[in-house]
Amino acid sequence: MTVGELAHLFNTEYQIQADLEVVKMKGWKRSMLYEDTGLPFVMPSPNMPTTDTVNVYPATGLFEGTNLSEGRGTTKPFQLIGAPYVKAHDYAKKLNALELPGVTFRAASFTPTFSKNAGKLSHGVEVYVTEPTKFEAVKTGIAMVKTAHDLYPDEFEFLANDFITKLTGNAYVKDMILTGESLEAIMTKVDAERDAFLPIRKEYLIYK
Image 1: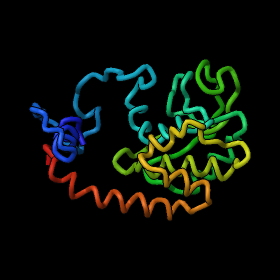
Image 2: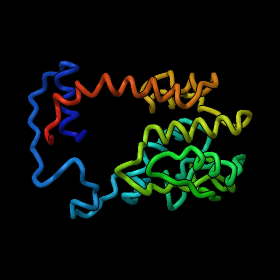
Image 3: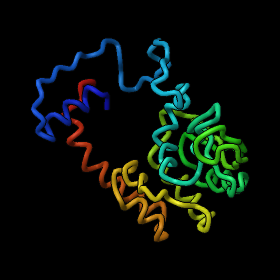
């Protein structure tokens, strides 16, 4: 959803009752990638320097709630994921074996200059979105976090501030990973929530 569509949804569903006016864009279609707009890309954050970062962020942003680096302090934030304890080739192999749509993973090593593991050689993966229209960011992010947990249960940690719960919007993703539930079981619950939301979403779409 666009920011304007979300504004209408929040205003009504949460009974904010603001005097809200959304100016509709011209020439934009929901199927467009940013590159299709012909507009220059302006960084919304120092850690989101390219549209490649934008594509992966809804997936790899989940690592902000773990002790793995999400690539802050590198030239490819959110595209590089890892930690000193990860074995890069094993992690990449496990992720590629999942055959997640529209994405592939390359074993990579990097040393963040700041943030998590600053100055420490970290190992993990570089994330490549190969087909943006097929890429399922939520499923990919959960799969990446769960795979890291399952491969390295003694070293992997969710941060004590429970930020992962804020990032996922629920407690069950973290709980199901910790209790060893399958990726399929987790995604069944995620999909059920999505399916319940879609009819609500439909009422607020400005761009059909």
